[in-house]
Amino acid sequence: MRIGKYQFSPGLIVTLVTLVLLAILIRLGIWQLDRAEEKRQILATQQAKMTQPVIELTTDIDETDELAFRRIEVSGNFDTRYQLFVDNKIHLGKPGYFVVTPLKLAQNDTYVLVNRGWVPMNPDRKILPNIDTPKGMVTITGLIKTDPKDVADLGSANRSNQGWPAVVRYVDLQQFQQETGLNIQPFLFLLDKNEGHGFVREWKFVNLPPEKSTSYAVTWFSLATLLLIIYLVVNIKKVEKHD
Image 1 (spheres, rainbow, N blue to C red):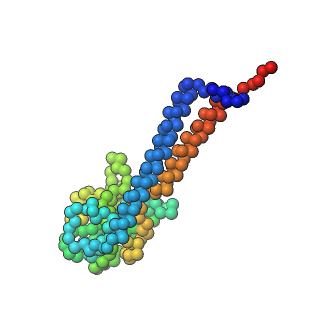
Image 2: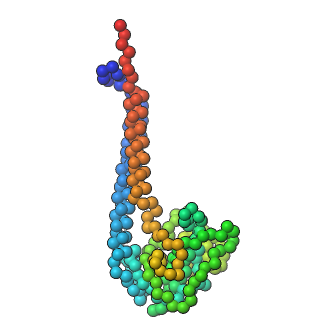
Image 3: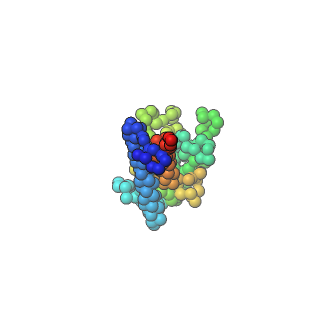
């Protein structure tokens, strides 16, 4: 194809490879835009639930799906015999743990696992943090998190030590109940930021925010544009005029 003084003559194989790569890059960009929108909807739904009236927990919960991310109020006593340190949690670039302490409910013989927030790790991993826990009855509010497992299970053991407190990769409700014999509610309780008895609490409910997915989409579309420009530049040549 000739356009004025320039000749556009791409090879067949180069064209096919370019079209395939272009389609892949554009599809990846669209997928990331879809992911961003999906995350916005998830966060909007969660936010709407968080703003609903606080529920006072007085009985066992059997169905948790509708109560996910609802704020609840519980009263009871912390039981420090079976405390968990959830490993590999980073805050401001520093390694640490989430502190999870069971709370025996005042109304019955069930327990709620309370994530009290982040604490820094000792340089010597053998030395676990010294956690201050109130004695006696407390009344606290927080969020219901129905799926406490926030890391991929790659088949390795969840526990990394023996005895208590336990150092774990993630909160496994079934495993905890089997090891302790305690009857626990089927969710993780995320302690509100304004409550006492806790530590650093900056709860995140999606692994990557929508803005991150949007930036990935921009990257894929930019690469697609760059590929197209390179394809055109390489295959357009100026025609030499001969006398």
